[in-house]
Length: 291
Image (cartoon, rainbow, N blue to C red; front, side):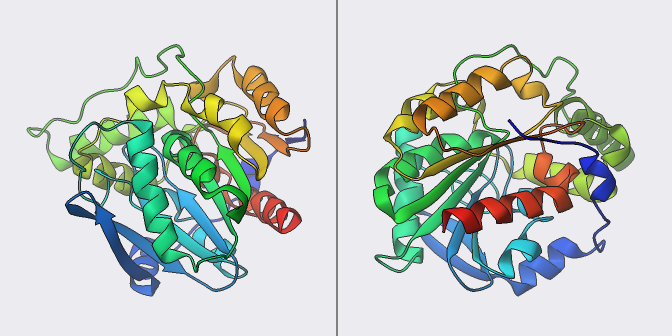
């Protein structure tokens, strides 16, 4: 299993207005989400790469990756149902239900018969794996990034503090920064103001409880059914997978002996943010080899 060391030393700063720049550059598309709508953003041209964000997140989980990937691919980033700008669907919110909505949207957005790649962060691997099964041979690669959906795990969030309405702005930002240090980053020095902005915006808009699905074994069950090349990228200090990375990688390899698996030493759960430049190079290589 390849390890990449000193990954965080190669990550450069982004413009402070990067979210505004990316949002204004995006083509925004809406697809049905039950009786509501699911919101998608697209950048670039070329083969399609679908980036599925994590729990309590939105498309902005990928803000350090979109520009690099969109130079060679069409990047498609949804806000999953009940998160970001997308409406919460009615009915039972199972992995299959959310995966169905995601699949239906992709069938509208990606030209019929065209291939695509799917990259899934954390909780996003649960609906993403459902979509990959449904889309079958159209999917060229399915990449797990700090993925959930491998079954129950120890709770890694004992140090998290709920952000309360009565907190002032300074207290909210301090709490959000602390939560990111506990759950998302290996090095507290890598938690910048942009990460805090993203955390506050996403948690304020979250209307869907993703944790129960994150603790399901949906990804573990779906891996053997996916026909695409299966890959995995992890942060070596990912607290959500502590002590479990070897077992999860064994499951990926059992499903696809040719799977590429990379662990980035000294990096936490939000690997594509904390080690963005190295992640982008690594993931682009996987995409090209799978094309």
